[in-house]
Image 1 (tube, rainbow, N blue to C red):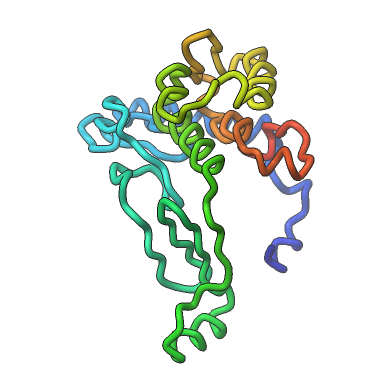
Image 2 (image 1 turned 30 degrees about the vertical axis):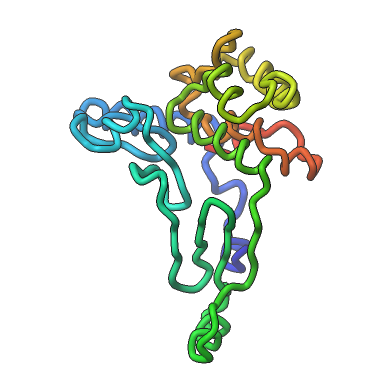
Length: 211
């Protein structure tokens, strides 16, 4: 994406094992300091609203990270920023000059957008529940969206079965639950529900790419 990134030698980057060890160390140090691990790269004090929201299953995740404001639209300002509504994603021009030109002309500086389908919404909700609640209740979710869970997510369940063998998730007839180890691989778990990765023919995500 950036020219200067090509200057980084692959051999200079910590290995997957080292990165995982660093993450465990960070988790341990912050836990000792009294912080609660929310998920991904978020930690908070026990009394924080993020912790309370996760306990009450009202936590949400958007482009900025975890948030307690689930039903809010995001209006982005600045070059390359992304706006989000329930129906649309829209990204501003990436080049600053292009962005400024559109603003000076009194036009919305939007370079591209995507209208959300029903399938997108269902999968976005499933991914959000996994990343926020660390679990997905099959029956309530299926009833909410009017789907047959195992049929709709047949491909996702195939991927999750492989992750279950690695101890990242626990699968039962009632729910999909992220294990303590799986919390470090939330991206991999969420990617099982991403239909666009499957369409692109991407192989099963390797853990080293998400740590």
